[in-house]
Length: 487
Image (tube, rainbow, N blue to C red; front, top):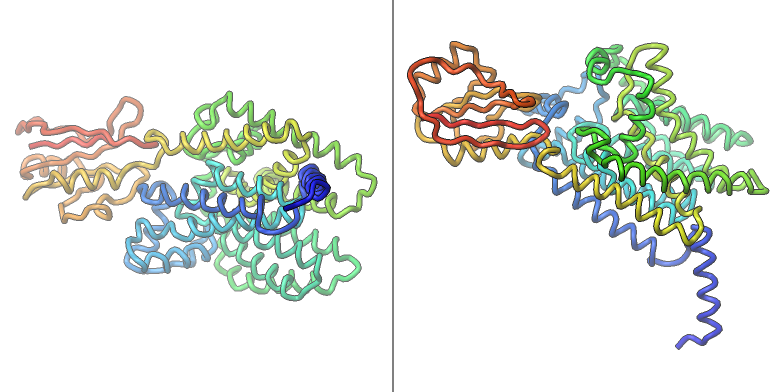
């Protein structure tokens, strides 16, 4: 049994570690906590993996359809699509093309913790990891069959490898940094701003021993060089400019979206205005305390101060770089691209919350994480999910009879046939004549049409012959579909 003076000494050591945010020791809290947080991250992402494909995911699916791999697409580098193509070979491609995002999005959580432990302390790292695990924006793209979660994973890995390489001077860490930086560049073009900041930091931090950082950055550039011939300029930017026009408020609202919002809803809906205010007040108090305490440090060259400068540089690199590029060259500014700075943003937030006085630290952390969890829970509701195309297919499979046909009007959703288990004739975007033929000849007709506001975008019904309505069903989502069954 421990003696009283031993318990008192242990208690003092525990309080010192809690105040500093720098935890030492074995697999206890918070090192063990990251296992729980990682499990939560995986569970949240897996719970949504069977949602219907939507939006840009259709491009990923179309590139995979027919078991063909197209890596020359000008809008994106190939790494994610290679991984999606490989994972689709394991089973249902409509689900498994999301596997790289699910696995790498989940793996980012312990990476953020490891990076935080080396830079701002394990407790701050755990809070940053929890932020990435339950953030509704990160959860959405941790399921999306697009390259963003892959990019964030490699950005976090390259940052961790860079910090360890500067600290240890080990060739292994420099090699991992070069490989991970190339992986981020091969995942998405918007990583370039963070990678440039990493490269510049490596040269500055090792200015008295430049050989290793110069060689590592040269290797990363050499690994990426073969892809340069596939980059064909600014294709697709007209769509970006139309869907997400750049205006004076874009930098603020887009950062708020990444911080606690959701890509398929406004900030008024997710996380809601009161929760957003509570989140900003709590986070702002922590960041203000962090800036104040950092400014009071006598040794401004301390490792903690240097690490905070690095994280601040990486957090600002993407929004500032994208904004300047969009103003000076062509508009490519979009909320999704800001995800490259998510690991650094999460750790700065964690450092700020752990800098708060002990009395306020648990409350502020609970408010921030509680807001994010609430936003994610709201995003899982029927009105905010991706369109329920799989549910529509199950409905048709269960009710279709011999001679049944389907008239389908898609809205950023894939061909219905990929979800149907029965071989029913499906006419997609039916013309007036095609719909009239189905109306006259089919023994049973399913009309599947999206509802935009109060208006259903269904084909106009022919005047004759009359058909009886057997059933109507509503399938809710970010795009709601009405399905009408005619006899």
